[in-house]
Length: 126
Image 1 (cartoon, rainbow, N blue to C red):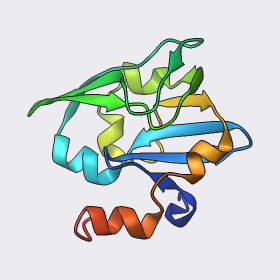
Image 2: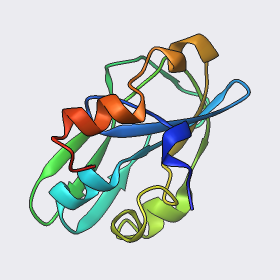
Image 3: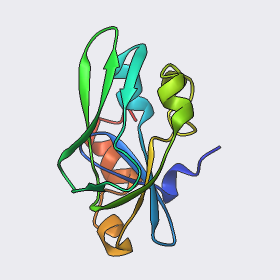
Image 4: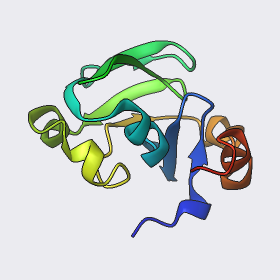
């Protein structure tokens, strides 16, 4: 079980877990629920640079196409190929089905929303 209180969040419904200078990024259960059945995930390439607030991938569901926004700026050091191969895994456990790992400045992660602020953003439905 992921310790939700230790995660940071974005207003685009991504969660971020920091370990040293590597941020693991995924979408929240709230986002996965709103998307519905996820059928396709496109992630940035390892070695590419992503910029906070800019589109870095795509998540498609049976209901809609959603853009994945980089929550932080940095270099992509790993992608979760298992999610690309089985996009529906995001619906099973959005926190276990992380998407990318990005080498970052840890201070950038500190600036994101904490759990209480994210819950308030979603109207308590997070």
